[in-house]
Length: 512
Image 1 (cartoon, rainbow, N blue to C red):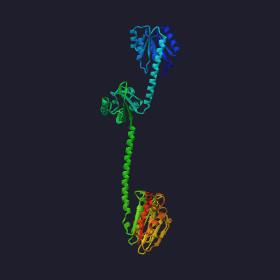
Image 2: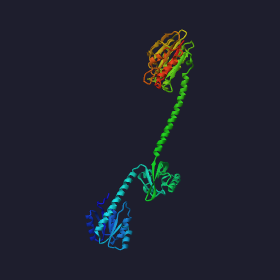
Image 3: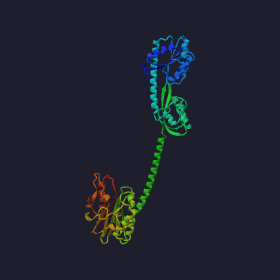
Image 4: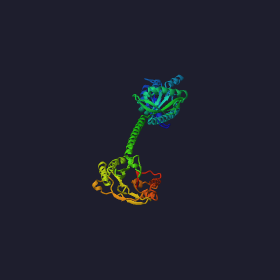
C-alpha cells in the first residue's frame, strides 16, 4: 500500500537534459525513484516496461510529442490509475484544454514552480494511497469470493454478467472472459430460460421475483451436461444501478447421495417386506406343527410366551392307542426362528413314537440321536418328557436340562420333586447320555407342573427372579381348578412392565 510518506516511481520526460537533471535532483530529494526519458516514444516504452506510479511529461519534444505520448499511455490496459502531469512552456488556454483532452490529469507551466509541484505530488500521493487501499480491499473481497465453493455471478438488471468468481469457472466450465457481458441464461438449459426471463422481468418491474429465496433448478455445463443446483438471488444497488448477485450451488452430489439413500431405503423396505412375508409363512407352518389335537386334552393346560415372534420353547401332548398320556416340554438353545426350527424334529419324532406306545427311555434316545446328527455344535434342546398311566395312577418322567418338575397334591403342596438329572439332548451320543426315567405314583387330585427356565428367570423391575419360590408360593392354598390361572397371574404381577428376555412356557397336567 502506498502511503503519503511512501516514495513513488516517477517517470520524468523532457527533451532538455538540463530540465531533466533538475527534475531528477528535485524528485530524489523528495525521496522518489526517478526514470528519465528524452522523448515521447522513449517515455511510452519505459512506461510499458517499468509501470511508474506517476508521469511528469513535457509537451514539445522530438520523435513523439507529449500529447501523443499521453494518449498512448492512457490507452494501455492497466488495473490502476496512473496520473500524468504536463510540464510545458505552452500556457495558453487551448494548450491546457488539449493536454487534458489527451488524458492528462494536471497541467503546470514552465518555468516550474517547485513549491506548487511538490504540493501537487503530495496530492497525487494521497489519491494513489486511496486507490491502493481500494485495490487491496477489492483483492481481499475477490480472494474471499474466489475461495467460496459456490458460484457467485453478478449481473445487471438485464441479466448480463458483470463479474464471476473462480468457482463459477470450475462449476460451469466457462472461463470468466467467455461469460462476462453474456446473458446469465447461457448457464441454464433452453427450457428453463423462459422461466428465468419471467423472473427477471418481475425483478425489473417491482424488484421482487425470487429475490432472497433459494430455489432448485437445472444448470448447464459448457460441455452440455446438466446438473442439479440451487440458486439464491440478492439485489444490490451500485452507482444508482440495480444489480443482481446470484449464488449457485452444485447439489448434484447431494442429489446422488439422496437417491442412493432412497434406493437403499427401498431395498431395505423390500427386504423387510420379504422377511415379514417369510416369517408369516414360517409362523403359519410352525403353528400347524405346534398346535396339534393332543394339546386339547382335557387334563392339560399350557402357556407358551415367546420372547420374539417365534418361540424356542414348545409343548406337545398325545394319547397312545393303549390310553397312555404323553406330554413334552422342550426348550431349544436361544430364542426366535432359529430356536423354533431346532425343535421341529423333536415334534415329529414325539408324535410318531407316542402313537407306538414306546417307553420314555426309547423316545429320549431316538430324539437325542436325531438332534445329535442334525444340529450344529453348540445347539441343543432341553426337555421334560412325561408318560402317565392314569388307570394305574403311575407314570415315568425324564428331565434333561429343563428346570425340575413338581407333583402337587390337591391342596397345592409339593408331593414330589423331579430334578434335572440329565444332559440336554443333542450334546453327547446315546452311549454317553445315560439316565433312566424316574417312576412315580400319585393319589387323588394331584397335578404335575413343568416349566422352562424362562419362567423361573423372569425378573421384576427390581431385577429379582420369579424362581421356584415364586412358583410354589403361587400354588399354595389353591384348588386344582384355579391353580394354573393363579400361577399365570402371579407371574404377570411379578413381571409388571418388564419384558421377558427368554421364552416362557408352563404346563399343568391333571393326574386324574
